[in-house]
Length: 462
Image 1 (cartoon, helix red, strand yellow):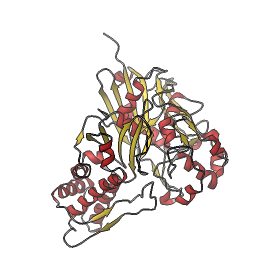
Image 2 (cartoon, rainbow, N blue to C red):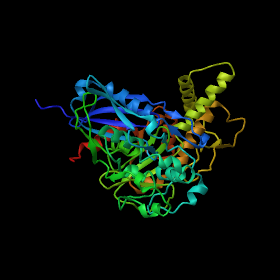
Image 3 (cartoon, rainbow, N blue to C red):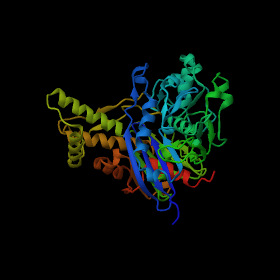
Image 4 (tube, rainbow, N blue to C red):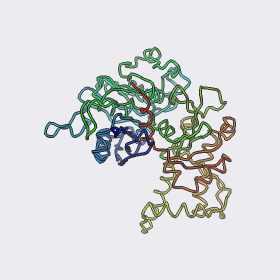
């Protein structure tokens, strides 16, 4: 009987860490774990800053992996890692350590005093005026607030002493890969590099000359390899995974969730979790006549055509928390799960109304100063179900403005595959998708970014 060979996939997300063990022969998941990171920490930039504590994220990674069966982990032959895009963490030597017991490494830990916080994709300290003052990137992709290079340039201008404290920077998933492999220099994929700004995907290189012209510390930029390539080897055995196991370069969570979901080039994938993305795969960059769509590096030199909205499940969650808070203030506390259950049930029964919600609580990258608003309120449409239905409709309408259905029709897309808990648990949103896009919405067994990270390193023979 042949030796079992599995792949460990990890997704280091905005709110949680998910891990799975994937069998490349049966294409089944053998085991999986997840844990909320609860890693958000206050920023000295107030609501404009968005920071997370990396040691807490690393602790969640250890928690998840340590709870997978040992007899499964000893058969892991590769590790694939993906995570939240755009964000940046800085560190210097000594940013991680191996905790040993009886001479055996039992876990890796991040060392808080030798690293910065993770400045996430939700960080809005880079105002439009600041971004407009920067040199234009040599790239088909723009650079927005929350993107790694933009955040680093902001620090260069406003907190240069902070940058001088550190030698390296990368996304949080790249940090985890560097820690597991004990890398001297962080390695990232073209997916993560493109998500930072100032990266040319066709040349597969940073805009070093442009960045040098503003005295940007080029030494902080990670080395870039193609997505799916191996970054290094596990520097010691870890929860039963053998020392020397190849570890893939960190990937984008969006690309990995789509890799795990897509069954055909005629599928588009709609992911609604914290934010919202609608995407499909193409062979090359082309002009679609729409400035709200981007071409992001995918796998095998292909691109994802993406409309990426900052407003998704986070907007609905804020609405639900607001209702819960109102009930508490009225002296009628109610669990959040009950609020969700009720608003979805009421939304499904609610008739259409003239109420028009602009759901841009977080603005959008192409209109960062946009705010949320409500129009056409009258006595006939103030029932809770109608308001919730109008809010769900508005989120899909916003995506439809960013990527109209004609673009999907021209790409011969036959169906939309749904992904993300924000969509799978909300039948009101699902109805809105079919209404706006005139395409069937289906759910498959895909969608797991951790599984996608495992699939991505599966075929690599480095």
